[in-house]
Amino acid sequence: MDECGLHTTYAGDNYCIKPPPPDKGFQIHLGPSNYDNPEPQWIMQPGNEDVENFTATSGNTSDVYYYWRQYRMRPGTHHMILTSGGLDGHRIGGAQNLAYDNPEGGIIPDEDKDVGMKLAANTPLNINLHYINFTDKPILKEIWINVWYRDAADVKEAANEMYSFAPIDIPPGEHVVLRGVCPVQGDGRILTAYGHRHANNVRFSMWHEHGGMKDLIYEDYNWEDPLILQYSSVETNNPPDASKKMPGGWSGILNVANGDNMSFECEIINMSTKTFFGANEAKDDEMCIMIGDTVKTTVSNLCQYTTTQVTSSGQ
Image 1 (cartoon, rainbow, N blue to C red):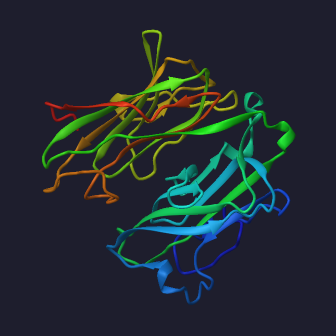
Image 2 (cartoon, one colour):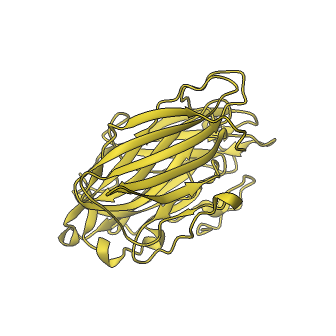
């Protein structure tokens, strides 16, 4: 944080990070070329909201493996989705927090020393960005992504993206719980997990279902700055406390087995006058998405979804 020594008139100068050395990785930077006179496309006026796609080319000129990714985004950036192969390509990373490292601080635990993701030379990339400005001043749209290489000789296992988007159809005035149950295919581990949602979500929870048991591995109540959990031998996560609406989840390595399920819930209250259907509108619509990384296993996105009405206020 605050590596670049920026002194602009916009919020978020401290999020700027320097790129890796050229032999260690590359940086994707989207933002103005001149902070004293930013191009209009990088300025968002108060009250505005939009979703944009940007293209880039990966900085590796030969095939590489990577794992550690650093994401930094100025305030007002609601999400960033990085895909390889263009707009409709394969998701290889993403963030909703303004500052997020995966893994934290670049420290790869012993059980993940052989984990990596392959990236072909000069891969076409797409960066999908959702910006919102609920302040009374213009904001600057800008992000930095650092991708750090791994020694190919160390990589034996590929990490996979876990991603499940629950269908949304919530009429005005309804208070519901959306639930998704997604089958686990293969024995392995869940490396990271978080829930993407909008301002009408009051709770996001995830469970690991196995052998007739159901372990709560993630619970959070903050849509704007969501909890992101990493499950490893070097991470200690706080347990959640629903009575105090304290976020938390599973601590330590999270093993899963073929035939298990990963399930998740979104509790949503539609206080608007329109039906929610899953649009990229932070206050006027809603989403319910389970996101994470896995290794030696995949979590299918062919899930079973249900919607339950909440009869009590539950707020």
